[in-house]
Amino acid sequence: MTTVTRFAPSPTGYIHVGNLRTALMNYLIARKSGGQFILRLDDTDQERSKQEYADGIMRDLEWLGLHWDRVEKQSLRMDRYRAEAENLKAAGRFYECFESPVELDLKRKKQLNMGKPPVYDRASLHLTEEDRAKARAEGREGYWRFLLNQTRIEWADGIIGPVSIDAASVSDPVLIRADGQVLYTFASSVDDVDMGVTHIVRGADHVTNTATQIQIMEAMGGTPPAFAHHSLLTGAKGEELSKRLGTLSLRDLRARGVAPAALLSLMARLGSSKPVALMTDLDELAEGFDVESSGAAPTKFDAEDLFPLTRAYVQSLPFDAVAARIAELGVPADKAEAFWRVAKDNITVLDDLAGWWDLFVNGAEPMVEDEDRDFIAQALALLPPQPWTQATWGEWTAVVKEATGRKGKGLFMPLRKALTGQAHGPEMADVMPLLQVVRGV
Image 1: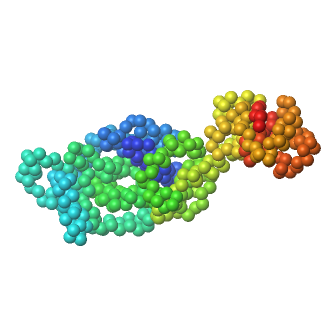
Image 2: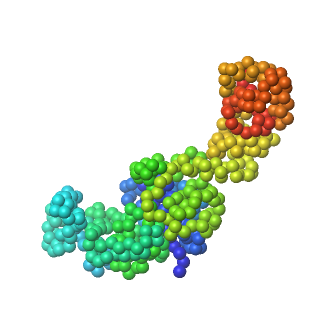
Image 3: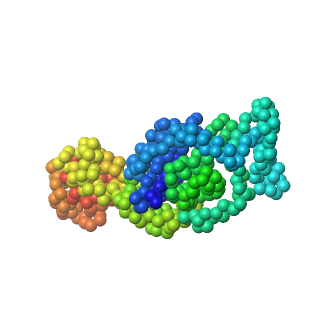
């Protein structure tokens, strides 16, 4: 059987690291087995779903190299959902309800006060046709629930392990709203059966959804896929992250210069028993992926962990991979490779290149201690005229040493800080041929 997975975001916003974790796990399962990966846009909420978000989701996945085999849109499958709803009505598994949100809330509060779980009491299941006609005459709009078989729903979860949920402890889910909107739980079940999805990885907050969807799929005559529920992300200190996920959108991380390889490498191993390591090849990443190695406990995520990985990736790039980027900065072609050799070990993201070229072209704000001012003034007076070469640094410091008697760190560090405005950086012998301006003290 061909492995089929899917990533099913709602195009109601930009995808964030939590969404990516789900997408990546499903993608890697399909890639490892030579299967299919479906991008399904769950866009039944027409008010909130926007084309700009759908386009953004695709751009983010393409940026990461997570290419899908086909795109599906739930908004184009409404006739299929209506047809399946009619089948389930005929089978006695859909029933119409008329309670208002206020009435349902009062029922829940009453049950809680009695020490009972707030499970829907199935009052509408026993309505006669006359009762339903009366409710409509009163201006009430009907919505539809799925009638659960009140047995235990069990499956072998790929991450959590054996799961058993008593369906009697779960309310019959609302699957079609009064305004006709088909809700996620139903549309997703129909799609997963129709599209032959064999494996689904998603967040642990969907466990109860999975229980009800298993019964929905079985009621349709379908075979539920293999489910796995990954842990939810927390902040670096274990704090709730869900409210901050919007600030961790992929497009914002991209704007901060995070490398795709860094993001994929971290998210593929985060929360698993395997160590995080930079991997630049998706086939290698897929081959080493094992969903069973993922843990179920909440997983700490710190966006700052992406930058050491990005730094390692950037520093591994050959000149050809960055030549166009360097040319855009205005670096002359005859200096471009030398510039890359000097700058690459001193940047974290590629955007940092601009700062180094600005330093070389316009000079740095000198960093000079009060006790070094006379020394620096004397040293600069001894600086030979341009053009400077790699030999210039050694020749100049030798002359300065002879004239001032300074040596070692007391000689080299003040000169570095005066020329570059930094205490650390590339070898000064490599800097000198690129440095065009030295500001006065």
